[in-house]
Length: 432
Image (cartoon, rainbow, N blue to C red):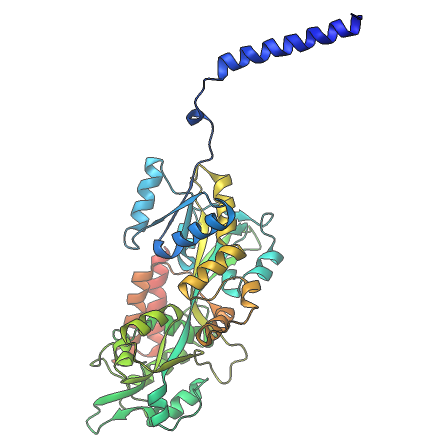
């Protein structure tokens, strides 16, 4: 043999022997001890029955594209459960929360830098309600779903009253009240046009008030960035210096004032939801997510849906929408997996499947660009585009504050300016 053939043969034999030795040492190791990527754990208060099937469908269609598990938690115990999990070293990787609650938990959330989501891309991709997630250094989360306020209307009652066009602005609502309400000489009400003026028996009363405050130019709360130290400051804007909140409160209250021609609702009546289902309420202000509940509770109810009424003098239309967002926990032990799953949850494929299942409008502009054939959905899509929300220091406590504000004005205990100032002070104390 020639010298180079001898060398080549020696190298080949050495490699073969080496491979036998490596197999002898490591070949018997079980696959169970190999390094695996952990399953991404997601916590939220949205229904698991709505989210998990979408995971399953995508995994079936795309051969296990989502390695994640969603855990539905109680709204009442979510904060305590999360604190305990963090303390125990077993936190979830992602949370799906109301965007209004994200600032309350910003110290537990990983701020998504603008380098990961350029501001231009974010605004071009998601609806304007998502702007609330912007902070000085990045985003608190990425939008997941939106549930905007709309107006349901009884087709029979409007037809019997000779009303051919559903009111689109508040002036038209006021004009139609005498035709749609039935009030006797003792101020007893057997049929109402619209449920406003009270708080306890008006479903979504805080959301309705929020919509009216937005339409009056008041932002309720804001997160501003200081030009000096680039730090975020959270402030309450119920004071009359921001827009005209007093006009919103006075407008809301007039519908339960017996001295006003708009009187058609009082606190002795059943809840606005029950009144609408019983065909004793012509116009019902509710959220898009209530559609299936109304259909299921009274399958024979002849109703339709329209846009939430707007101010006739306002330039821009706006309505309150409950926005949910996906956030990454700082304590996540699977940051790479969490980031990947977050992108899938807010991506076009998942969002299309999810919104079709829950009958809600998408949060992505590319999906909203396609007009749905469903008449209800078309209204929901438009509402999503004009929806807005606000940071809420405590949902339960601000609901009480809003209720006290409305009732203190209706009872004559406070003037509207004093009621607003008192509500503002109480909300500021929640922040402090």
